[in-house]
Length: 335
Length: 279
Image (cartoon, rainbow over all chains, first blue to last red; front, side, top):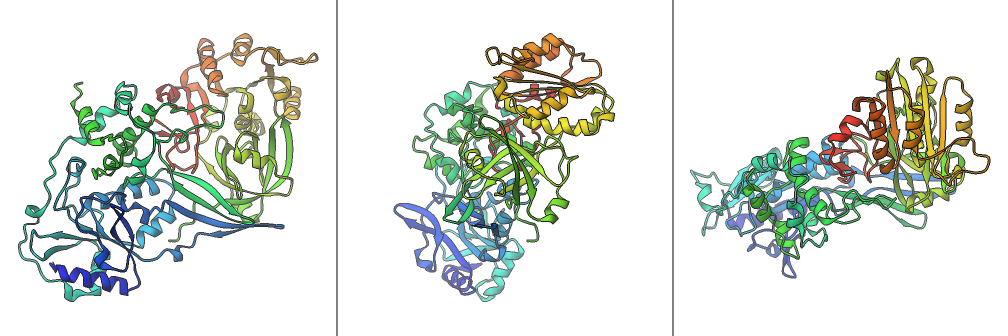
């Protein structure tokens, strides 16, 4: 158990340890993760951040290595794991924390991505359970819940209108945080955490949907569902599990950097061949890829689903394409 | 983390440049660091990411045979940003290479069989690796037939090697150009690859067919092979889809749940029929 006033002290203690503190901040009407030293800046009244927290472990643009071109050749300066700061992600919702498992699966299923792994290793996740939800939330339909500790190192749950927070210490990293300021933590007695959590009704059965989708490749469904999709890719950028990326060079004279940057299967050029041929030439095929990847290919190949039910994509969509509605309509198809 | 950065390329020196056809060049590449050269291994069918520092990476198969050590070769057509930058490289230039990635042709399973190679246009380079690999282990295989077609005589790549193969008694080479693509002194066939294949009608008895070409050629060649009695299990092809990483993470080369970079690029005719139309 932790008192509300102690949270600020814990934040300050972590900061004092030299950790880079990321927390949700209210900026221009959006709640976004950013670096802050100031506890009072942290947003408190929101359902979910606009963007997921994935940028901390999988930056929007990330240096893979630097190079210098000289007359005699090319010198490469490798990515330095030591350069990755010890980071604390403060205030992560359970659906966002649940995204680290599918990301880890993608970055490690065969070749091990040491850039991602180093960032994840250096990140401590302080989760906060959800006391409220909105119509976009569906964590309970995809294996999560508003008080799920999966992916968090410590999970705080606000206990109603009291000044108390239940603190669940999940991992060794979480214990290390407690060890910094053990005096802030008190023993908790018989707290019924569930009664303080948001109510998120189960809307569909993901295993059933997954099974169905495997036979839906050639369905009219995709065109119907994606009729209004603009192909802007916003859904992928806000998603806690989307990991598709591009690799580009940025050069300044003889020096340069090879970077990877977020990409999206929703963008028309994502799969375009140099010849002009495009295996996914219309938007419905790209929408199909998005749903099948998350609900069929990933569970099949990586034994993990690519959706945590956070609803970020639906809230961010400029034409209000709601993934939950589409999943429910797939569930309802009689077959 | 002790693991190395999987995005780090080998530094390669462009040892030799051959102009194969208009806009098509072959680079012979040597590892700048000797340790890289001696530890590097690959097998026929695999590909890599070739890069011009400051411009970016591009995906091609390794066009040389793993039986020839100490270097690799790649053949590319100048089309996009990276291939255009590659085309401006000179002998001595340093470029990057990551690889090898992907699966391989199962040449061990082909021992004692006849091999029928069918390639169209710029698809001979991805097949050249396995052709030389099997020619360098010639005693392991029975008859080797190569059918190669290009749009015009000028577009035929590896002309000195075509000459060499046509002079070898242990290789049957059939070259063809599309109607209208011939020159007055052209001695080869005139016609599209599937038509020529039907005409020369190689036996399917104890034979594997390896087909590589543009999608339209593949589509028209498969029915001819079927007519000749080839089963889907005895047909191999190598697919190409746009790629960035080469190892199953960047998310763009998948055909349904299969990744061309991990499950391919080599697929059997049987696998190809089971794949959704997404390549």
